[in-house]
Image 1 (spheres, rainbow, N blue to C red):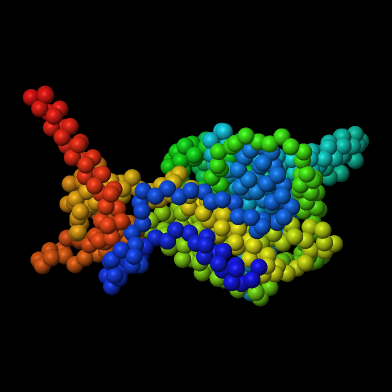
Image 2 (cartoon, rainbow, N blue to C red; image 1 turned 180 degrees about the vertical axis):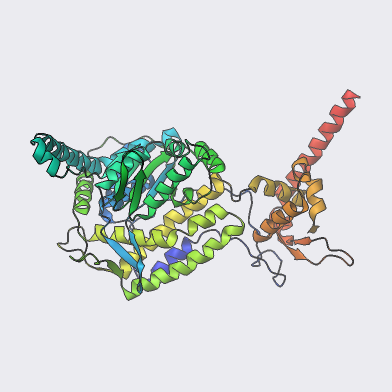
Length: 513
């Protein structure tokens, strides 16, 4: 893929831009002061082809046709499985001169859709090779455990207990996960058929210290690294590497409630949301060898070693790949500027530098799964494909989730109510008293709350600060004239709705008199 083709793909996948206005800008329709459509619904994107490693794409597409499901859900499930199979010892040093920032291939994936989307069958299909590896590890552990128990008491006391290495856990408690991870330094994958249960177990202590400790555990599990345990009954111990990939499913409504009620500590933003399309009738046709090839790939990834024998042997980006990474870092910084509108979305964008590096590790390992030794350099073509997938599929899914499922901003319905009032009355200038006239809900807002709403509408390109009239200090905002032209039809409908409501109220009061 050429540099120009790569940039074309990224430009085509550019996330929604929220207007930032200034008094010098032209306010005519078609200018760069274009207001955002607050009523727009952002749909999940189609799966881009020929960017994901071929073995994974062939497997996901073939199984999606057979099952009648969204191939994107299978792609993301398979990527989470492959990321978990790759040992955490394989890491990339993200910046050339910063040895403290290293990323392994660890992903948190959330499949979002109704029960009919077949979330669990998708995850089960992708998990099969990892499940087989884990079953074999458990059988080997049981044999060693039996041999250990058969030792004479004196020998058993001197011999170390068998380590129970795992590659997956399912709906495990924090305590059970800690026990598994003490002997699984390369990390595990946690399959959560219902992420609502995962969140519920985490918040079982409500707002107490237990809930914070559980959430802290999972936040650490996203980053990896050593984790100290201090228990009254069992004493102190150390988990060498607390590393958990996550693959889970959830319906939109429960997730919306969870996000609304939960502490905003960044846990939600670490999940890569995938909005699934409805399932359709599957095909009953002979299967190709894509399942076998995928199973073989997962096994080879699990047995993979770092590029060298030394503990400090890490993957590094080539000079060209570093240029791509730095270009993306600048873009992600700009995307995080949406914080004034949607802090949660901005926080999610803030994770993308690390996610890009993790995707690069994953792509690199899959591409060299057959090589006798893993090359130590991630080249530009790998970085290009990882970047194209990040911005061509993951970013649009995130935008669709944070806008259409959660709402573009925390008080989006209130913003729409105020915007509807502006359109219905064709206001050219607004101030606090206008919010008090708009509706009963907005009437209760303080001047400070109104100011925050106006600032958000400013970020959406609807308003810009205006000078107050002489002898006044009341803040005012000029309405972008384009809103009345672009949303004229919506303004007429809103005016008609308000007039009908007013007439109905007068009629009811007249009957009661």
